[in-house]
Length: 338
Ligand code: ADP
Ligand code: MG
Image 1 (cartoon, rainbow, N blue to C red):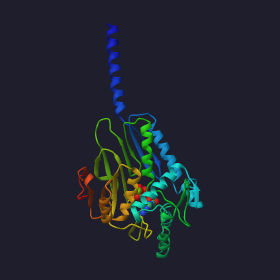
Image 2 (cartoon, rainbow, N blue to C red):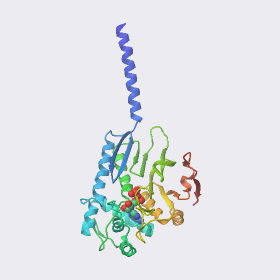
Image 3 (cartoon, rainbow, N blue to C red):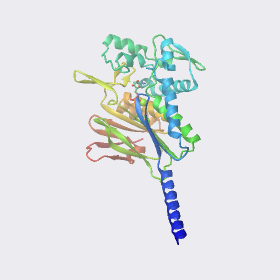
Image 4 (cartoon, rainbow, N blue to C red):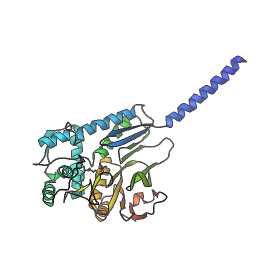
């Protein structure tokens, strides 16, 4: 009798262990950390148990190479010396950026750094340059003048690179390799406004991504439902300063070296390619609504959600039916056709 009771208890314990283990398996591993000057959160379903650590290490490695403000980074060394041999990653990202810059025209240029510095964005020591300074700064923005020989890059006189507009998207793409190698089933990587949606969630549900409310960036004005890809948002609210009641944002128009002021509050891009998503979010912000719409109509491999200061939300065909406005937001949703 005693023996049978023990057997029944053992069976119950075994059953509970199996249930708990299978629940634990569908629960994601997650980690939050500071990198690329922002808070990142990674959530991984299935695969090796150390995947979150490996993702964090890979992003930290990229940050150490790409951060223009870090004196030891490859980009900082290139900016200081004017010429430098760089690693595979850095060469790869400069190459991709130049290719994207060629497609995006004057809205996107990785030689904006002297202008970004002149406004004081990296240091937080803000300053409004004079018209004369701005003219000189704008004249120096030209990434077509960068020379390369394999991994050695040479910058034109006075030029400095800033990969801030693409680094997080590139990091998102690089994380795919780690997730594949570690056999992850799915992952949601929030790299500070650039969100990589990888694989298929174990419960079969779709991914849902909040789009930040520029008036309250910790909250969302709506949700986008999707099956994967990268969702990158650029917003004036992310970094800015105010002087005499006027707001100066960290996204600059390369033709004027001035912060963009065109009625756009945020641009969200959905695209499979993370580097492209990140470059597009910055570039379409600079282009403004009409040119961004034109660009979308001639390039079919991405979707956008553009929020303007009159509370209109412009959504392209691929995301219009997948977007849900949150309660309490009296925004007008407008469909952008192909
Ligand atoms: P965030 O980094 O806040 O997510 P973005 O991806 O839009 O935002 O990148 C903005 C950063 O890119 C700026 O802080 C600056 O370093 C750089 N940048 C600003 N304007 C441009 C531009 N027109 N082209 C390329 N890089 C830019
Ligand atoms: Mg960007």
